[in-house]
Length: 232
Image (cartoon, rainbow, N blue to C red; front, top):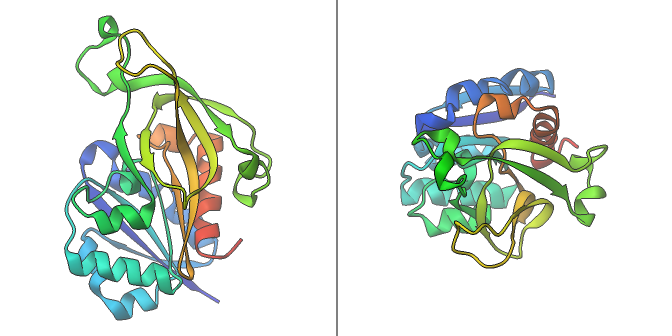
């Protein structure tokens, strides 16, 4: 039976929403989804369309969303539609909407930068070596099966979050003399969230297509999308 996936992409171009989501469209089709693509989150306000959608994959960094669209998205997930995404496309969307932030369960706060002497004024200023570390919960979860802690060189998201998340992996921001915090900060890197009858999946790695093609990152996102859609 064919299932319906809706990819909503747009917002800040720095996250390459078209190229990034295009990496996963073939996988979704091979997994039995009829894939539709939209560039306006207002589609969430279409109740009939949402009721017929099994999975929403969102890649919209920052941007704005209407109250009607947020309500439609929340209602759809609560009724059983899965919601999945990565990096700023889901964890840094619609900053002015508290209802959206509550639904997703985590909001990008910052990505700490390199030493001031190594800063050049471009995106690479925030590319750090860091480790994604599985939690005990993650080690037993189907999304993370066969995956161990792994290293990345990219933006390391500092995320504001709440306890409704089931955190499958974390990353730790160390103390540096050029930053103002005084102890290591642990942020979720991969989490799931139950919302009504629906499921939410978020992975914070994914700043650029090369990161999304990392074997671990890509596997986690592919499995996360299927998990959110209840096909795993």
